[in-house]
Image (cartoon, rainbow, N blue to C red; front, side, top):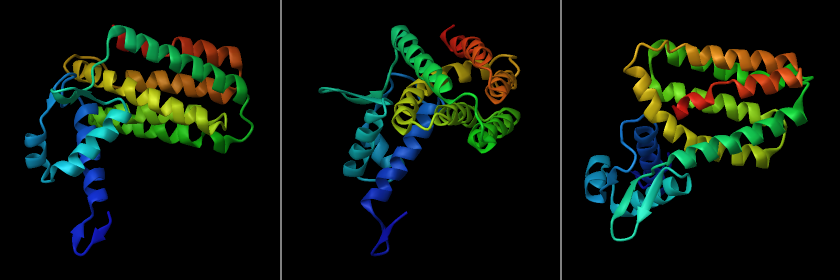
Length: 217
């Protein structure tokens, strides 16, 4: 963080607020539609309204916060249709990536996916819901990156951030059940093995049965 005259700069306060609020939203600590009252947030975060409002604006650009005229800000909500459409867009982008990229000739290209699997396993073993969701997102962003199309990867990351908002609710529900937290790891391991094998029909089949729609139940 940048320090100016012995104090944190305004930019650093914005970054801090974004990181804190994003954590709370994506970990399921806040509920979709929950109001974000500026007076409460400035007091809790120890910042003034200017950096808070900039942080809320940036979170709105990421699709995590919504602004309502005369009612202020709230945690974004996603309808069933929104979620269905987001997964549909994700599926189209993933199919485009693997069609362009496979077979992968440089094993280093898959290093990001392999590292995300390690992080996913650790998170599942510790029960850290946000870390699990983050690792899922990192894995899929790494998958989008194997095609070398930076603009596609950027759009894909934005789609996944919105999906992660929905996943936060479901990860919280899963934590209240007896579901094996390693189930998600195994699904991603199967997908990784298919990508590493380089056979396009197998990868497309793995993507189709990857389990994303379990979050629509």
